[in-house]
Amino acid sequence: MVLVLVPAALSASEPTVVFNTVSHDFGNIKSTGGSVSCEYEFTNTGDSPLVIVSVTNGGCGCTTPTFPKAPIAPGKTGVIKITFNPTGRRGEFNREVKVRTTGTPKRVALKFKGVVVP
Image (cartoon, one colour):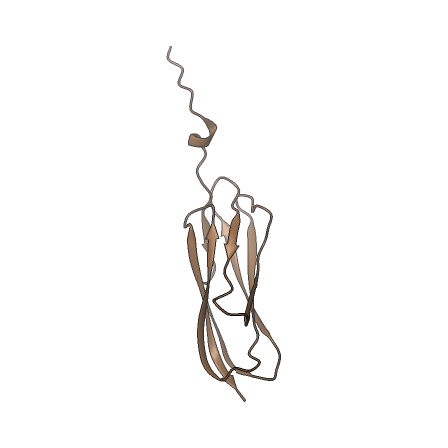
């Protein structure tokens, strides 16, 4: 009889993040109408907990991301919320925030766009 021991870290698959959508179109928004938000829902389809390590702000102070800080268990869902403040801006915008995870894929770009009208 042969007994093979496999460390737990090698036998468990890593987490996998699957987003329902990775883009959002705000359409026309008013520059004085206040902030607008959208949500990107995701599921951990892997076999171990998923951690959202970071979400960038898109390179400006006009974008604020919020995301779960606790690990997402296998089979469970989470939401990343992006809030965009159009105050002082005009015209088309096309931005993205970058999500870093402990799963596969390691990095995901969430995109959003629209037009700021006076």
